[in-house]
Length: 485
Ligand SMILES: [Zn+2]
Image 1 (cartoon, rainbow, N blue to C red):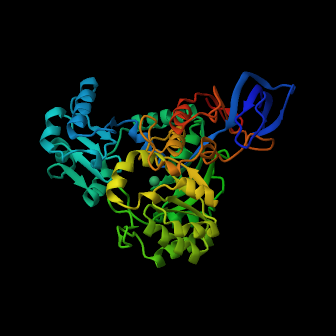
Image 2 (image 1 turned 90 degrees about the vertical axis):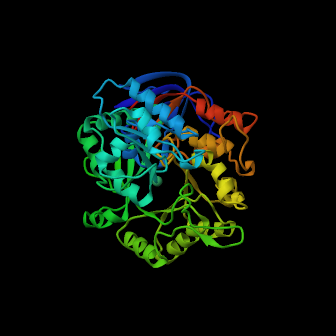
Image 3 (image 1 turned 45 degrees about the vertical axis):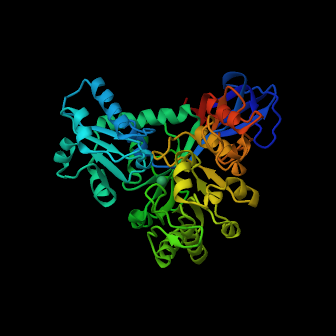
């Protein structure tokens, strides 16, 4: 299948000339770029000077959980438990199913609520429905009495950490609804211009994507990462990073081993140094354990994606990479000690970062990391030093939307608010380069998107640049030369 995109302008990621050209997609690659190209038998798309760029990647997602959130009452952005109750009440009023169907919400942050919630107030709006509201960081849940009875648990208010991690996997969705939600989410991805994901999968790592492929669903590219609990299985199957996975039509590939080395910011468990050097937080493993897992992965041809949110965790993780010789990425890196930048460079480790966390968490960071916020998400300093950044969302913790991630890196807040630590802003071009893996050039994969405007158009200030990025409309998405949107 050959497609001729007639009259497109290249988004100048590397200073490409912007006068209109024709682009030919054939056999999954960009086969030709020129003017007045004539391609026998090609399907011709008249593009009328629209903009073409490489398709976007989200370098850190949990797709299955992201699909599940499509079935949830959205409690994100609430600042008070009664606001969340109101959303539950509205949702229940809109239901036409059985009066005792399970209602699940997702998205609020306990650190954004002005007070602790009670079971009674949730009971008051839920009628006969069991109701569970999951916090957006996945570390706690709020259940009404009917839901507590259903799961055989009992407490007032919020269920946290260990108790919650035991309960959360028992909250299951109707399989038909979930199958629908997956398809909807994939369509949303293509509508945003996303052509590829890094998906980090807790268990049944290959299952969902291979099943979707077997059903003939049009898929994006997915690099599937696994957790230590499935490392043996992956090694036994002889899978190495980059290997195509059976049935995936070349789109599904084996990704990295994912290791979570510390906690998180909003649960106060990130391993960090405070202003006077004292270390606090949670280290999930000893250095020896990290080295051991990384070495096994390396010996079997797997790269390693290691989660390190706090700076103390980052130092431990760098020690581990140094000792194991493993390659891969560091995930999150929310707090970076400047003295470690040279080691990051020497080890050649890209940082896979999620700028939208900054928008959600800057208030909490000011409070929880006093005197250390100069080192929080220091994108400008990292790029200036030569560190390579890859942008992602960590969906469902943040929305799976690379445009918003780029905007957050550019303005370091939502456009209506002041930039937070503006000295660490990066440009739209830098953010865009960190959100793609390819270029619009002959021989590159035909993973391209058409846009109604140039997202890199120079604008006066970072707030308008961020708004312009988020307002960019994708009019077509191609994955391996196939039109998916
Ligand atoms: Zn994650």
